[in-house]
Amino acid sequence: MGKKDLIHAVLLHSNDLHADFHSKEKDEKLVGGISRLSGYLKKIRKEVGEDYVMYAIAGDLFRGDVIDSEFLGLSTVNIINYLKPDVCCIGNHEVDYGIAHSMLLEKLADFPVINANIYFKYPERRLYQPYAVLGTERYPILCIGVTTENVSHQLLMDQTVGAYVEVRDPAEEVKKLLGELDAKNFSSIMIVSHIGLEEDMKLAEQLDPSLGVRAIIGGHSHTLMEEPMVVNGIPIVQAGTGTGQIGRFDLWFDPDTAEPADSQWKIVEVSDRECELDPDCEEYVDLVKRHVDDIYGAVLFRMDRKATNPARNVSTGMNMVYADILAQVHGVDVALLNGGSVRAAELGPLVTKGDFRAAYPYLKDFYGVETTAGHLRDAVTRYYTTLKNTIADPHSSVLMCSGRLSYTWNEKTKQLDDFRLDGTVPADDVPIRLGLNDYIASNDKELLDAVGIEPKMIASDLWTGIQKYFEAHTEVWTVPTKDYVTIIT
Image 1: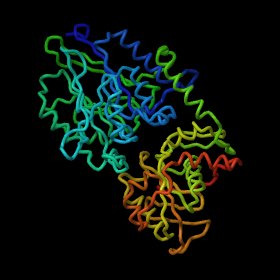
Image 2: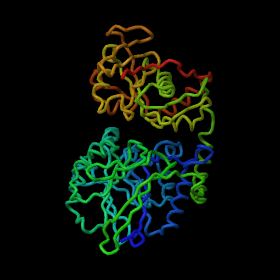
Image 3: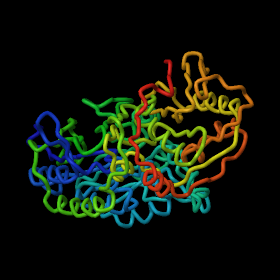
Image 4: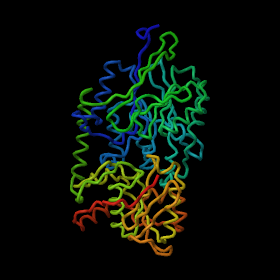
């Protein structure tokens, strides 16, 4: 039977959109932007037929633009509705605004939001719809959602219901669910996953071929793939991050048996050469942007040059600037933040309020503790020795410090080669007033145990304090030229 005799369907997929709402120039093209992505989806639906085109998002709609943070994700869900997804799985950033708030966002979505491995503990039940069925009545495709254990970190910061929620093993939950459902009822079974490529590979290894899983559509690690990674006979795909590209599965089904007959996958660039903008989506984004610009278009401060942030696992101009600002605003000797909390690739030299918030959206709580240089040295060591992956892994986060502290971590020997306060090696009993962003204060138990004293909240509204600081300090901010943190790998 030739392909012309088979039933053709298309499954498009994105992951880690991170509120990437605006087009960017690339190689004399305009690439990405949410309204251009919506235009591409409309084009394919028209070409193939609405009933035979499906669109899945593998988590992390939120974070990356002040349009998102200003409205706590509400505007983002309204914008994503223009894409008409058939399904979206929960990513770790879907619970950034709290578990209860994520349930509100789910109600605003015009599409199924799925997850099979986040549970209420008491009573024991899944928090979200565990799966969705895509496709047509004749060719149904079962999609099961799973997410990363990193959601547990956000749960620790959720003081409402976080203690009553847990994240379970994705593989066990997939097998449990497939044991409850009859695979014969579906033409194909796919997992929409937000656990990262390495964990997807482990997941595929644990799935017996008899379960019938045909593909894992992944997210979380922001991996831009040129071809599927096939593990245990299961192709794993991922489409990088943002709206500049989309994954495309072409699927063919046997019309007699409704079973899969063939498939092909590729990455497609979403540019002005591929498709036009969706005018309705563009109009809504512009409306929200004008509102945000009225609030955040004002200049917050100026820097002597542009600061960049090429990676989260090394010292960068941007994470040094943010650590220094947190230390100055709150009057601590040393401020610590995780490299992953800085979300943009560059900043300045002119920094608007919107620029600042988009690059560092975690502007809630800040914590302080009185400790000593010896305890802080132990804390830094424990941070790196207890990382899930080594600091060389691009998904790990450097422990960024403000400028009075500098240190060199040797990943080969697993120890500090250098540790200085104000340019000199401090005695162990030198007192230090330490500041911590809310992620470290809520999640890094090993570091806090080394500090020896539980930190106390010293600010519950970082943004107000930062604005007041720059109203009083109008001088040009100097971007550090020498790294505060050196990592030897």
